[in-house]
Image (spheres, rainbow, N blue to C red):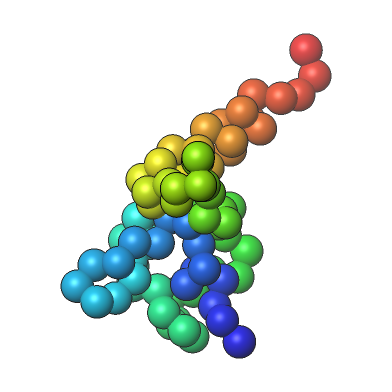
Length: 74
């Protein structure tokens, strides 16, 4: 089974391995640092049929999480 982190849009390839940009850990199949319920998991996004960079995906996810915090009773 593929790990959730290895499929994440904010994981980038560094030196032949994949790294989580948010938590700065190596993510691979069955890595011990794998997060089962990660708030920052995002499917790789595309813009004009081009994949967005991990940095862009991280910015999107941070914006999404921030906008959720701003919701609530007024």
